[in-house]
Length: 352
Image 1 (cartoon, helix red, strand yellow):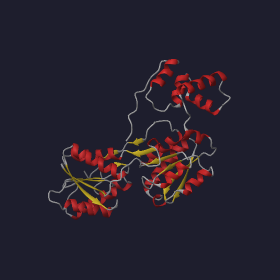
Image 2 (cartoon, helix red, strand yellow):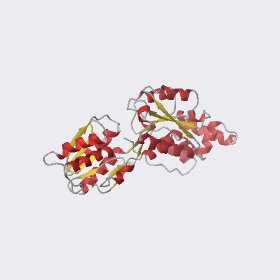
Image 3 (cartoon, one colour):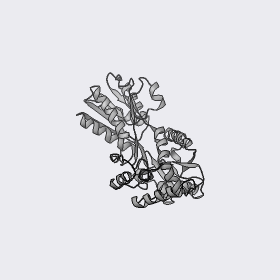
Image 4 (cartoon, helix red, strand yellow):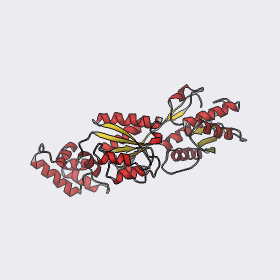
């Protein structure tokens, strides 16, 4: 999902720095490129752009000359943030999701990162069209927005972008927001870790419990494809049990179907901890021991997962890190130049 970073060029000095920037691949020239080529700090370039009188006329002339030669254009998002006096950023979430643990963790991370930049976070639940968020931006109450979209085509994102609001989306892609304004968790990589763990324990008949439907760019699609890829590469048989939703009851129904099959799986990966809890219940109802008869792995690392019996092996969903990264991307939009994927981490406990 993310492009490979170009090999860094380490210029010698002066003209070499400018030449190195010119020899790069045709990526957008950044203020860091200008700073290197002009032999000044990135902060000096920023002050020149603001028209600060703290910078000497000679230095300003040199920086402007380098900008012209490199074809540098100030980033529109950064300019929008600089032009407003407010130190507030908007956190936008669908009304139906505003009280969820996912939103709470994202807000916590976003708030921590914003505070380090002397900004605050304003949380705004929105309806299906996102007009409430747009109004806050137009009235200059906020400088930009980080958004948890309801779907890949959430019109709230399009409304903010269309109003000129600097916007970063979290956890899923958005048709209205370019890739480099996107921060996701490495859901596919986490699923690969989960299935690889089961393979390392000797399981070759594997089960997958997941909501049906594969909408590209969503959390569920990434986790499902990661699991399928790992099973295929490991030479394992993977049986899928599709369910209607993400809840415990769905996991119990899906787990029961898998465990009732002839040649049942000996290892099951459920793409959420709630689904995994349902699988554990189904195993208990079938008189099976966990992990002796069937191993179970979840995804999310919900707080209660470590206290279950047996404690649940799971993949940590790095929500706070995603929230922090989204705010960094909003305030420092030039780095990195593509969308960001926050790593997930397998936590091994007693269920596997």
